[in-house]
Image (cartoon, rainbow, N blue to C red; front, top):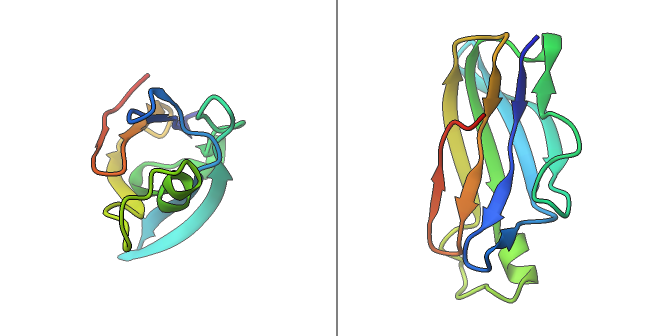
Length: 117
């Protein structure tokens, strides 16, 4: 069965981003429904997949990375309000049996993502 995973790299500091809260949502009948939450560990990863097996179906998903509190705790808050507080990444999963790895590379001013493996 498939699964959804992530990791976060703080490219401003050159380190994994530990302690970042992540919200997982899925589009259901035109509305976004929260499925789960997680917090990254010392390696910037979650201790378990965000979704897996029957909980991971083909469809549209949104990961919301709540990076504002993380950067504030690191002393990298540059202004109020912060330029990036939450980073939403929306993507489609066509293969429910696949492994979708959606990493976030982030600084207080920019971010990038890709489909990893």
